[in-house]
Length: 133
Image (cartoon, rainbow, N blue to C red; front, side, top):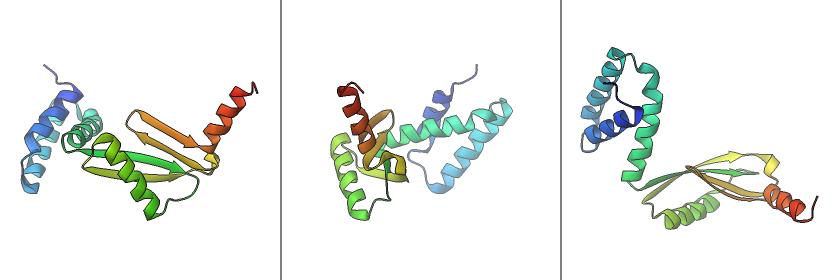
């Protein structure tokens, strides 16, 4: 019986959640050997991605991608982190800032499948639609 990517990820989480760094390395090495033995090495990346989602959920960590016209300063990032922490009851918020001059201003926040688009580009598009343009 072949395990699914999600089953591997859940098993990996269960195996490492209370382990030391040294023990975690051994668990990961064993997983890689198992994947190689079962001809599933190509699934390793997806397993790690799913594992990260499980780890973050279980540990109250939210990862957010913030797109802005210019790089955000620390105060702006801290304010956004505080907003996200409150909205998602997160213990920790990890933010990556992507600069995209095409949004013209404002920000776009992506958290998992959720998108909060407060960009000027979006507002202009919405205005154009409401005016029938």
